Length: 254
Image (cartoon, rainbow, N blue to C red):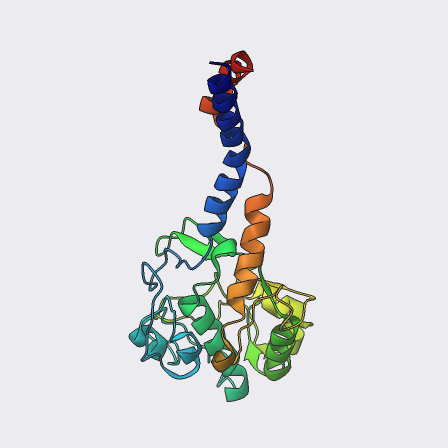
């Protein structure tokens, strides 16, 4: 009987000790390899061999369809009816960054640690404070500094009376370098802090890359895993009430 009590107490103690680790692992896994609940995203990521153009980086595992990837390259596409040329033609060297931004947003299954709830009618989730590698952000600003826009925050405040976005009355078209005086301003403010400017470099494993060589694999997988571990480990989940109720039993068995 004494042996039975000792074994029962040991198993119960192990259950108590293992619970936080099990919860942490489950919480981490919920943030990995997931798609947002948004307008054009698939429910689950998977292979998409026919992804178009710049979105082809994600063809091995994507949250976007081939059709979405084609539309991501179009001006005023059906995706959001957004007009990049609202202040005149956007230079191609600048536009490629917005296409890549769209491909990352629509296709990447590695943004789980930064998915946040939203109350916008056309989507239930968005990304918030994704740490964008400094080179990606700085090159985006460098290639777009002479492009022209009339707004800092492109998420809201447009005139949509024609069915596509137009500059609000009273605004003035200016070069990006005046609207966004530094790279961090562009990356962080243009989409309501979807991104944050990271001091980490490409290849560090601590920042998300818009651009990568798919032959070398997707570096954002490891980045998502790192931040998922951080998010899941802090704070440590409390013990469930059931196990707390079993503590007196454990004490009696000792």
